[in-house]
Length: 98
Image 1 (cartoon, rainbow, N blue to C red):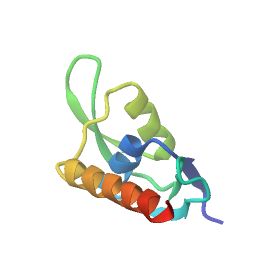
Image 2 (image 1 turned 90 degrees about the horizontal axis):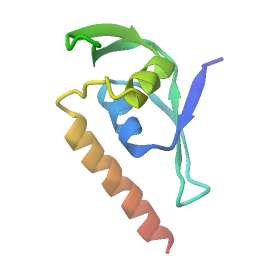
Image 3 (image 1 turned 90 degrees about the vertical axis):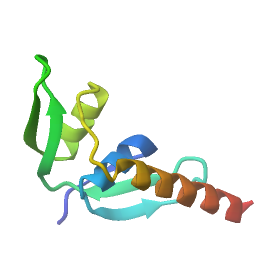
Image 4 (image 1 turned 180 degrees about the vertical axis):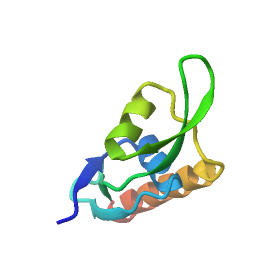
């Protein structure tokens, strides 16, 4: 069985998608709080250490969430486009349901 974790924070979701985490399921039963489920595999992410160095870390979903919450996660170059597409998808789905 695939281990998954669900997220609702679109900025974190965009970071996960940017780093190549695989979206397994999307729950849109609540139009105002869509839930994205990701496969919990490891990938390389970039973080800033406490002394200001940028390092590559092998991380799973739980690690990425921790880095994101601690504001040490760096975003790949694709992040702005992924975030824009994600916002557009969420807004379009909400408007279609009105």
